[in-house]
Image (cartoon, rainbow over the protein chains, first blue to last red):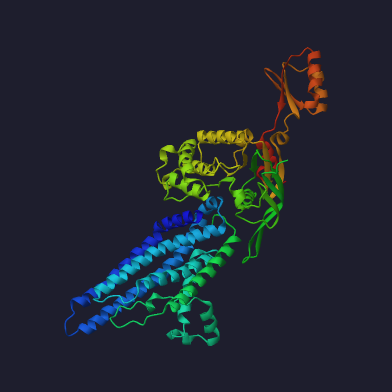
Length: 267
Length: 311
């Protein structure tokens, strides 16, 4: 009950967060601008250039979707960091934690509030991917639940990392570090072109320690071409999602432990 | 014998800036007790350690050493927090909520029955005179209104102990009087109130006990009577004072103030009867004999660095 109350309140706060609204509006503008050449390509499509134009449209769709998906990671990290930090800054945390609320309950409530926001974002992203596929003249080949669950798990990982970091650092630093971890995790994946820049003794520990967000990416399954899609088995889905959830849980537990010993005062 | 509502035993707290290697001792060996049912004022100049003490008491900070018990539990223990109402200094709020929604939010966190909360909330808003503004976003409230709302939220769970950090700051004189009356009614209902304030005249009116700290150290704790020395000295007003009594009064350490309508003599209460008899024997008229109390402000200024004399 208390956790639910905190989660809804956090969700309400985030929906009114001016910075988040500003970034979402700007991002929506960028996506709309990117859709313009796609519509243009469709308009000039002829029998002669059909294949070329179709490839261009699908390429743009892929870029937009990976941008939207990546922006979700930024949003999850920022919302998590801000959800805790803004309470510390304003001092509202003092009145809340004077109530019979345990510190871990407060943090879990905050985390779930962020996840509620991300659930809305994922639903919008899901709708956008179908819209773009339709505009591109194709249809989505993936199973819908994959497009909903995978990003949620990935955002849960980013949210939990940012939540741990914000119990130790300034929210901007926490956000920056969470992003750095995300970028590093992508760079050390063996299939990444950048992985060769790291010596093996550095790359391997980073690869093991940091969450493999590429593994948790729904892009692996978001195929909108008419080509047949390699289907992943249930066991592969289960182990991949368990890996992501385990990662999020470990970071959330670390955040709870760190927050338990933190001094609470108005920043 | 019931356990004290609040117990500090040799509490120490040091703020550390590890990167800069700085240490500031906020509290040094502070010990005091507040009994159940008392209204206790917690006084001290800015930076004395009042907010640190209250933060330790509420479980927001951890003491470096010493022991703190609140209603018999460790600070921050959920069983203690169920019985505590807290009014923070400059109560902070969610600007997007209105008073009713904020109180519902706090009632849910306090584990209150939603049905009971829906009847209690309008009563509390009426008690703090915010019933006409219950739908207005709190972001549009004045400072005084926010402070009243802070008091209302503290009373939500019918707390046994009220911890109030500057509860009357931001309130107009009428608002202050209402808070004083509220505290008096809570005291009559047997609640314990631990109150930090800079308004000493108010404290003197409503508190049973005073704890004064300065620069992280306890400088005085005791009942209002003990601290203000009620009964130690008296003031005798007579129509006149014969010259032959002057040397005697000087020897007794009395202070004489002659005026157009008589003479005021302040002296030790132990000598009042003897002086009154001498005055009557000399044919003087004793108009009044009144116990003298020093004011809390005098005591406070004498004990703390705010008065200019280090303790």
